[in-house]
Amino acid sequence: MIYSLFIGLFIAGLTCASMSSLSSGLTALASITTYDYVSKLFPNLSDTKLSRISKINTLLLGMVSYCFVFVIQNMGSILPATSSFLGIMLGPTLGIFTLGMMVPFANAKGSLGGMIGTFVIMITYVILNNVFSSDLPDQKLPLSVTGCPDRTNVSLNDFHSNFLESSKSQAEWKNNDDSSLIQFLSISYMWYSAMGCVLAVILGLLLSLLFKFLGDEAPRVPSKCLSPPVLNLLLRYFPTQMEIWIDLTDTVQRKSSSKSDS
Image 1 (cartoon, helix red, strand yellow):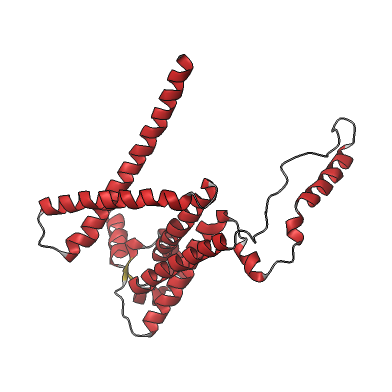
Image 2: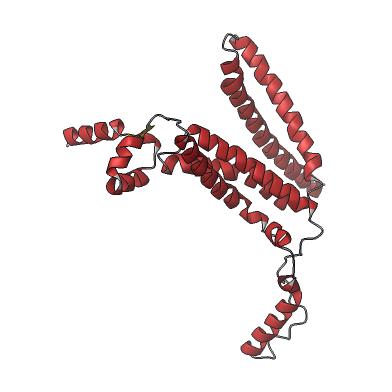
């Protein structure tokens, strides 16, 4: 009786925690969608109508989230599926924030193009990874000591050499003569977020330079939008060029106010 009670409390706690996180995420996403897109496209809508639209968005996003359950169940283990999804979504987002904080000549068009391009590349990579999953090597390092001698009856050097021989026999996938595509798709899912971040930065930089070369004159970046350590380094080594790219009004005002306070 007590055992069943604790099991019920444990399941109820997990359900409450997951539902609270899911509901807050869906509500925030629906509010952002309504405020950033619907209210901008239809500025004459009343607050009552916007509230109803936000509730409808919450329902639609919840249905989309539920549909993802049927997608994830075909992707194998939950950890690779979650890491793949985070790599697709959070990696490019981190890359765009990094690009905006550290590169003063990055513009909106180049950053947006880099993020969308990274989304497409990462989604394509994950799809190809699942399509060729049967051809990918089973890249598992040995976690078993089966076949190793008793530690108490052999020396440390003998034990270590025997364990290495056992490890080599269980990691034969390293010696496979796989094609370049299979080797490229064999990158661990733990690297997906880093791949998305680096790709977003590189594509954002290249597209920003392309748009600037084509004559897109973006406004100067306010100095408060850049990372202070990066801003100080750029002003020290490239002062003339930074005056063209960066609006230093806030920096000058802060320095003057600090001098007056002192």
